[in-house]
Image (cartoon, rainbow, N blue to C red; front, side, top):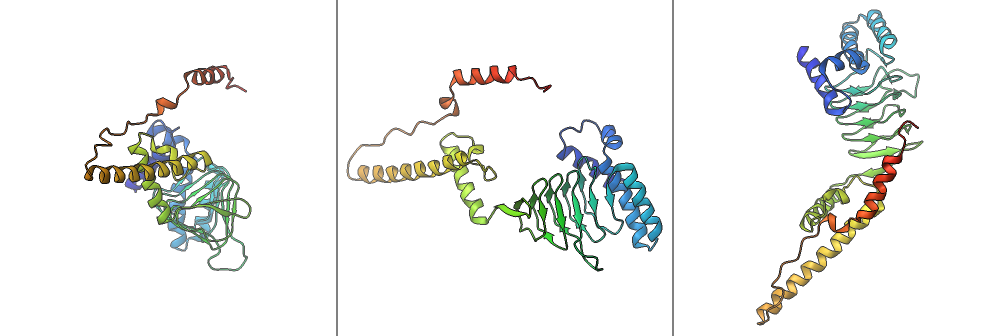
Length: 269
C-alpha cells in the first residue's frame, strides 16, 4: 500500500510543475485523496459491501469534489489534476499513467446494465471539461482536447477535439519515420529539432520541415555530382558546407522591441 502511495506522489511531481514538496502534495492534492479513498471503496465493493462502499464514495465527493463510483477500475499512477467536478462512472476502466483534468466526465449513454462507461488505456490524457461517453475505448496515448465530447473509439496516439470529437492528429508509423528523418536533417544543418516537431500544428514549422527535406535532397544530389566529377579528374567540392545557426536569423532590434513590449505588459490585468 505504501509503495503505491509513494508511486502516486511521484507521479504528481512528474506531471505538475506546481508541486514543490511531498508534504504539500499529501495535504493539498484532492485528486490523490479521491484516488486513495476510491481504493478502499473499491475493495469493499468487490467484497459485496455495497452500501459502505457507496457511502465512502459519497464522503470522498463531499471532501474532494471528485465523484468516482466504487465499481470503477483505476490503474497505477493515475493522476487527477485540480479535480473539481470530475465524474467517473461504475464500469469505467482506466489504465496506467492516465491524466484527467477538472470537470471531466467518464459517463454512460444508456440506462441498461452492463458495460456502459469508457475504457481509457495507458497514457491517455483528457483535457478540462471534456466528456467521454459510452462503452468506447480510448487507446494508448490518445488525447482529448478541453470541452470536447467523445462518443466513438479513439485510435492509438490520436488527438481528438470538438463536439462531437473528431481526430485532428494521428501519429502513424510512416509519419513518425518521416519526422525522425526530418530531425536528422535538422541536426545536420544546425537547426534545433523543435522547429519541425511532429506535434506542432504550426504551418510555418511544417513548411520549414519541407524546406529542410528539399535542401537535403539538393545537397545529396550535389554531393553525387561532385563525386562523379572528381572521378573524371576534376577537383570540385573540396570545402565542406558551413553549419547554419539560429543566431544567424535573429534580428537583435526585433528581439529588443519584443523584450520591451514584454516588460511593459502588466501581468495583473
